[in-house]
Image (cartoon, rainbow, N blue to C red):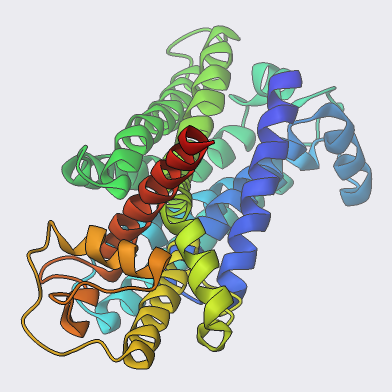
Length: 365
C-alpha cells in the first residue's frame, strides 16, 4: 500500500505540472500526457483502501469503486491513444479523426463495462479491489465487465508498444524516454492480457479460480505505470537539465552584459519551457553584444577565425579594448551554430578568462 500511495502522489504531481504547461501551451501531446497522468493518479488513489471505502459510500454500491476503476483505465488508454496519434498522424485532419475514434471506443468500452458491472448481482462489500477480484471477477456480470474493460486497452497497448519500439533510440531525449516507456506499456499489455485470459478461462470453468493471477497483475500494473510515467517525463526532465547546464555556462556573462545594457532584458513568455527561457537569455546576450559593438564603433569586415573569436570577444568585454581585427560580424554565431551554443562558448571563455585574471591578481599580491 505504501508503494501505491507513493506512486499516486508522484502521478498527481506530474499531472499538476502537465496541467500548468497545458494551460499555457495547448497541444495534443500535452492533452494526452495530462489525460494519462490524471487517470493514472486517480486510479492509484482509488486503489488505496481509505479512498476506495469513501467512494463505495458515495456511490451507494458495495463494490462501486471497481466500476470507477474501469472508467479510469479507459481514460488512461485514451490518453495513450492521443499521444500515439499525435506522433503518427500525417495531418491535422487525420489526427482529429483518429482522436475522435479513440474517444468513441474509450466511451463505449467504459460504458459497456460499467453497465455489465452495475447490473450484475450485488455481492457483499469487500475490503479492497484485490479481494473483490479474487472472489468475484470470474462470476456472471463481473466477468463480462472485466473482459469488456480490458479488451480495447489490450489491443491499444499492443499498438503503442509496437509504435514506441520503432521510435525508441539513444540519440534524442524523446527516443530515450520511449526506451523506458515501451517496456512499461508492454507490461500493461501483459496485465490486460492476463486478466482477460484468466477471467475468460475461470468464468467458463476451464480453470479453477486462483488469486495468483492477481498477485502477478498487481506487480505488472505498478511497475508498468511507474515506467510509463518516467518514460513520458524523461524528455521534459532531460531538456530541463540540459537547459540549466547551458544557462550555467553563460550566467556570469549574461549578468555582466545585462547590467551594462539593461534595455535588452525582457521577460520570457509565462508558459515558455526551460529551453525557451534559456534561448531568451541567450538572445539578450546577443542583443547586448550588438548594442555594445555599435556603441564602441567596432568596424565591419570579415570575421576572424571561429576558434579565435571567443577569446577576442571576451578580452573586449573585460578590458573595453578591442583587437583591430575584431569586426562586428565576429560577434554573431558562426554558420551552423545556434545562438545558445555560441553564447555558451562565449560564456565558458568568459568564465575561464575571469578565473585566470583572479589567479593572476592573487599571484601579484
